[in-house]
Image 1 (cartoon, rainbow, N blue to C red):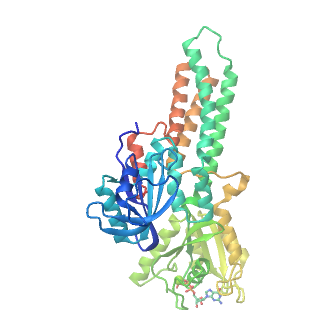
Image 2: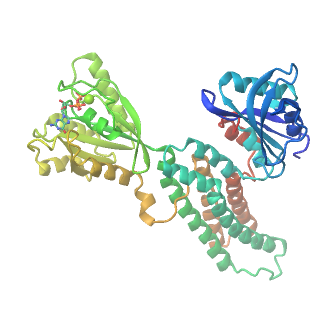
Image 3: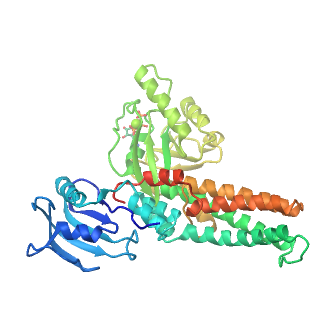
Length: 462
Ligand SMILES: Nc1nc2c(ncn2[C@@H]2O[C@H](COP(=O)(O)OP(=O)(O)OP(=O)(O)O)[C@@H](O)[C@H]2O)c(=O)[nH]1
Ligand SMILES: [Mg+2]
């Protein structure tokens, strides 16, 4: 199936200025093409690139012989390469013109420019990795924090695939016994009783349930959370925003209504990527520009994962504070009584009747007091479920989560059918359905359309 596929090539590093840039070639003609474009340090044709050796030399235009760049060439023979095909990589100087010309020369010698994700697709089609491992590669590349990197790498090494395979094995055992009872209804060939099968199906459902719980909570490491700072004007939202992102990103003045637009920035708090959002102070604004800002603030607060309600601790709470707190009562988050370096005039008891079960913290954007605690509370809310059980988290993207949920529903249906002595062929349909969804994760049952969609998200050269 893999024979006869055209040799592909692409620039595998980000295009821009860099010390080095890599052009990768993969396929049955990779070595042949490399011989045509590569000259060793004495300018001679390189008949044979030594497998796994690094050779210093140059790339020439294979039609005109023009010298293009000074490179290092690495040859990786099949099947011990990323794609399991013959692969050659040229480490060139990392400039756009250089890399484009090297790629052009390789293409002139017979390679085709790779589609996005085509190298990874070949690694999948050759059986080197499964679909969840292929998807983990994007997650490793896109990881914004060390925790996200660790989780993505876990999936690349097979954490999710391993758990899915274990559940699949269990489900297949149940299916085999059900199918045996369909094929030979009068013979007592099933070593498993209905009770055994029900037990095994229940175990699979609860393993899936656990996996879904872990995967859902680990998503914060992958996608991060949006944290909105909300409050009436002049309470110190922008000052807190700057303190949390660690730079003077938003303008701070003592004029109420300074922030008019939504300002956001990414930061990492205790390993969790957070998109912090500073907003206009909420009040009944007369000025149309400010009014638009206030509307945007309300919308941001509504859409946020977490909201920090900011109160000015140096004044008693007012109607504008109460209106804001009412607006976000159902949101997860915390209340920050800011300016605690000044004399505190807020009555916490009175405040509590408007804050629901949110934690109330005293902070000062000016002195930094209480900021660590606020960060801890926000990170704790974001990863509450992950840290709860102490298990190793497993990461899943939306597609994988949906497949896990569908598999679990089908297994539950099957368990229900077993308990109620439903005809075995109907039970078998549910189990087949569960297997289909489990196989969607590893790619065993993935359609061409699905694969197209997944690999089109990759960058070219990966
Ligand atoms: N003493 C003290 N002053 C603070 C603190 N935080 C902010 N301020 C001051 O409060 C004023 C308003 O701060 P901002 O951060 O601009 O307040 P804001 O909530 O963003 O205001 P708007 O953008 O107008 O809604 C400025 O003069 C800040 O220096 C604090 O913790 N302690
Ligand atoms: Mg502001």
